[in-house]
Image (cartoon, rainbow, N blue to C red; front, side, top):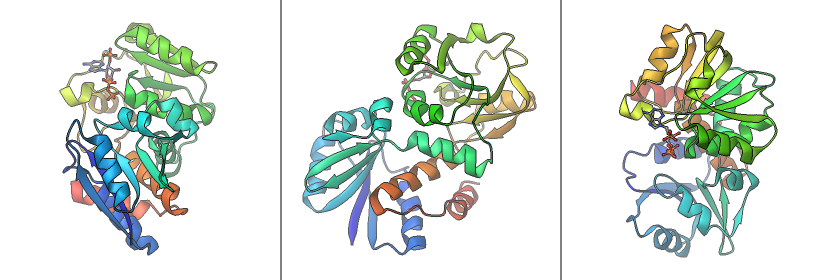
Amino acid sequence: TDRYAVVGHPVAHSKSPRIHGLFAAQTRQDMRYEALLAPLDGFVATVRDFMAVGGRGMNVTVPFKEEAFRLADTLTPRARAAGAVNTLAFHEGRIIGDNTDGAGLVADIRDNLGLALKGKRLLLLGAGGAVRGCLLPLLGEGPSPLLIANRTADKALVLAREFGAGVAGCGFGDLAGLSFDIIINGTSAGLAEVALPLPPGLFAPGALAYDMVYGRQTPFLTQAAAAGARCADGLGMLVEQAAEAFLVWRGLRPETAPVLKLLRQELA
Ligand code: ATR
């Protein structure tokens, strides 16, 4: 039996053991997946201990994704671009750091919501870790333009510059008069129940509003619904990033639709 775990602080709320348990049963993989609470100053020790008992890989959640990035011996291009690691794979004592968040977001929009990003006007709200973590895979889909808007405009400009051609940055005040086909909220404002200063007309007719947060009606989604947008929360992204991690570890990608459906029922 191969062992995997999610490590975080806190970690009890994590849905990863449930999701990977369902994936393992569906694909008949001989594996066990548990949740490990690491002390805030004990992330590296927790990883090393898990490797020492034969662990094959880990998911990393708040607040350790940047520490996991520094710990990895090698990084995938998407992890390097994200500046954060959510998936570790162990091979002969070496630690490979990956990040499946962006691929999960892309898969959810493309496969579950049925929307191609190619040529679409894409707006990302926020310029923190959540947005950075998804930028490279989103860019790879060829949206046009891809604009990052942030409360602190400077952070959006710096982030956009880092990713080069195809990405622009601005402040919320610069959004007046613009329209987008897909608007993704990657700010943490929803967690504080704060509405974002979004100008009228921002959502093009038939636009998709996507909040990376799941399990709650954020002010962003309420604003989007009032503007007539189609709304989605981040539960699909959660399931899809897990499927991408499962693919990294096991070499096969589980079917996500039944798992997403089940989780949706359990949350209701
Ligand atoms: P995360 O890792 O979740 O992205 P973060 O790196 O702290 O967390 O980034 C939080 C993001 O949410 C930032 O873009 C932040 O905007 P600032 O860069 O201006 O701080 C954004 N954010 C948080 N609270 C917000 C609010 N009330 N209104 C608008 N944006 C907010």
